[in-house]
Image: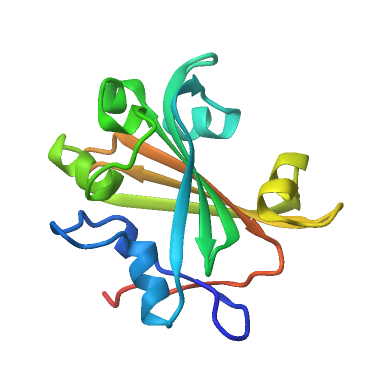
Length: 181
């Protein structure tokens, strides 16, 4: 979420909880709480070969295919993030996750209905130069830097159920809020 000082507030918990019927997605709600308009555009959904980082995170062999949902995340109609969510075929093949349409209640809600609930999340953040495609989609200049966040979600028994790669402009600051224990 972008704030007036352009800080990015990253709250993971709302993205891991299934949505109640009639509620909008977590991003739209977060933006609305700050008086902003959040949205997203689905760029692709279907089977692809898993990128190396995703394959490693999900513990898959080389060449393994996964289901991906690639979205362009918008704030006030401006692109602020690319979000690619990858699912093992055993989890998502033949489900609405593999179809190029909106998933009612969102992916987390559908996954819960299928018996997959996230119990552990590991996030890894790195910085890099944006690729040509990332520069185009995020409207960045040549040589623009990005932050890359790889989020791995596992079930209570430790099985990887989702790996998400998020790419956002490098001028952002990530702030994490964790619940008190």
